[in-house]
Length: 59
Length: 323
Image 1 (cartoon, rainbow over the protein chains, first blue to last red):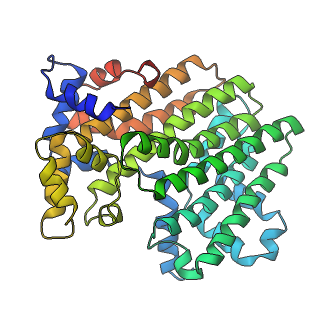
Image 2: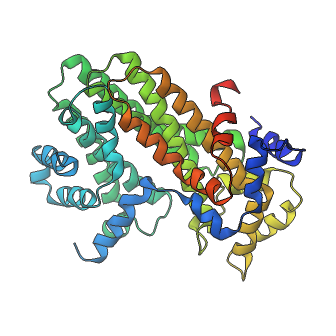
């Protein structure tokens, strides 16, 4: 499996205008603030954070 | 129907939660946070045309399994939020065992016929065993791409696959339909893991993954691919707590294509899940459709901020099964 190296090679090569790879290469120019958009909605971590909050309240 | 109240009421009908008050307290505390995963069996059950109530034992089983998994996961990860800090590792492990068994009991207590119950128990058994194996692989800190995806396939996919599968099974879906939904759920779980890795990597201050020299997906990419800033990234990775190192390392992750790669992997999984949904005959697919829309929404939002049409990525991402 070598999807990372293959992907990087694709990202580093000339990209047709309006293509999928060109769209993904735009992400290499975002700033850290814009990257936060990708953080998503982390269901997996929901309960652990909630547990900490309720524990802190002495429940 | 209040899913959380119904799930808690169902579980509290088992005598162990009366006898063991602290187990009951843990369940109530977690339920108060309304974990969204508990909805997944309901969504699947309704998708195959059965009423939500039929999936309550599945939600209960999933809830118990999840509590057990996270009690252990927190110990494996040295998570400062873990219950084991309060009660000790031995007791936390014992509670984890108890919740795993309670999950099986929740399915045993359902009113489904014995063949459905057997399929559901088998699904939960497979998920718990595979997840435990995935956790063990994860603590080895996988250092290459093949090992990384093996962890994800074992640790992250099966939980969500089984969540959906259990709901479909208790809704008495044909086995083929339930199996397809399980595959969709596995892909969904892998997407959740990729988001989790993005979050752990881009969080400020440095997440324990950085401090413990772990390799979530973006970091693994930046350490594996021969990009022009790799040496600099390795140097920052090894002194991430110093000065501006985290800030600089995160900017390299963006520039070297690590985030682009994660988005590519998200889109491929989303496309594969969408393909499965399109070929699976369902009584009501709206709930599953919403799940897939919600899970890819952060990517669409990013494309919007960049002025890109979501049609480009959604039409060109090759599904995983074509690789």
